[in-house]
Length: 599
Image (cartoon, rainbow, N blue to C red; front, side, top):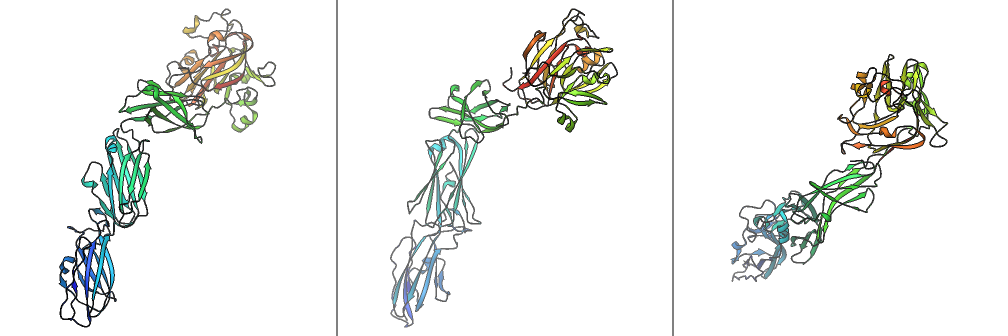
C-alpha cells in the first residue's frame, strides 16, 4: 500500500518533507502537511489553561462526512511519521491546543488555520496550512509627560463580547503593561487619571471595527493644548486612529469656586486655589460668568483676599440662572475651576405701594380703610398694609386714610396719616407691613409686625410731606425718653424704620413696660438680618413733597430673611401715646430698591 508521510514545523513557514514507502495500497494516497505560524496574527481565548503554549498546535483531519479520521493535540507527534489516507476530500484544521480563544489574558495569542485537500489514489498530495493570529492584541503605553503630571493613571480595556474579562494597564507597573489579547469584537478603553491634587478624571473611548490580527497600540500623552492624545496604531495594516481627550494637565494647580451668594441684581463670587505647582500672579485670576442660554462669557476681575479670591457680578437680572467659574490665564498657563450655577433672587415690588388703591375692609365688626384693592380684600380678607385705624374704628375714627387732594403722582392717591386725640387718648397714625391683632381695652393694642418676604432689598424709598407742632399730648414715657420730651416745647417728628427678619414679632403697647419688652432691640436681636431707619434730623416739617430713603444695613450678607417689617408713624413716640395731636404726614409712591447693600 501507499504510505502517507506527514511532517509539521510549528514556528515559521518551512517546507515539510514526506517519505515514500515501496508498498503502495491502490486505494490510498500520500499527504504531506506543512503547518506554519505567522507572528503578526493575534488571538485570545476563554478559560486559558494553565501552562498554555500557543505554539503547540492541535491538528485534525476531517473527511467529507465531518468525521475526524486523524487528530493530535501536539503537532510534533506527527513529525517524520508515515500517515495514509483513503482517497477523498479532507479538511485539515490546525489551532493552538487546549483552548478555543474565547477569553482575554496576558501573553495568550491564539493561532488557527485551515485548508482543504483532495487525496488521489496512488498519488502524493502536498498541503500547506498557515496558522495566523485569530484574536486581537492590545498594548498600552504612557508618555513621560503623563508620568510627570499625574499621580496615577490606569486604562481599563473592556471587550464588548459578553462574558469576556477586562484587563487593567497601570502606569508604572511593568507586569500590568504586558500586551493583552481579546476575542474579535468591539473594545472600550477607559482612562482614569488622578492629578497630584487628588482630583480624578475619567474618560471613555470606544474602539470599533476590530478585526483578527489587529494590534492596537494605545499611547497616552499630554497635548500642547492641555489635553491628552489617544493614539491607536494597527500593527499589520498601519491604520492609525487618533482620539483627543480633554484631560486637564494642571495636575498640581487646582482652582475651585464656591456657591455664589446671589441677590436680585448682583452676586458675590468666591473662589480659591487650594494647590499649585506654579507661582500664582493674582492679577491673572478672574471669574467668568454667563447667563443661561448664552454662549458668551463675561470676565470679572478677581480681588485676592486672605482666604482666596472674590468678585461682585453686577447688573444681573432678577430670577435668572447664571453659570460661573474661576480662571487663571498667564501665558501658556491656563487653568479653570469647576463651574457652579446660581439663580438670582426676585425683586418683588411692595403690594399697593403707590397708595393708589384703597378698600373698605374690617377689623372685627367694624369697617376700616386699607391701602389695598377691594378685589384683593374680598379674595383674601387681608391687606399687606396694616394701619392704626383698628384702634379707633369702634369710634368710627380713622387716622390713616386715602387722600386725593395733595398727591405726589398726579391722578393717584396718597396715604394721609393724622395724629389725633380720640375721646380719651392720643392716637398716632401709622402705616405698617403687618396686621393689627387686637385691642386691649382702652389701654392699647397688639400688633403683628411683619409680612412674608424672601427677597433682599437694600433701600426703602418714598415721598412725603409733613406738618407738625410742639408735643401737646404726653403719655407714660420710659425713663430713657422722659428727659427728651418737654410738653409744649419739643417738636413732634414722624418716623420710619425697616427691618428684614427671620420672623415677625407681636408688639403690645397696653403698658409702657410691655411696649418696651415686646419691641425688639434692632441693634442686637438675632432675628434681625438688616435694619435701617430715617434719621430724626430728616423727619421734621416739610411743606413740599420730598423724597426719603431708608438705607438697609445687612449684618449678615449670606443669611436670607423670611419677613419684612416696615413701620411709618405720624408721631415718633406714638407707641407711648405721646405727640402733637394735629401732626399730619402724607406719604406716596413707596418702593423697595434692590442693589448692593451698605457694608
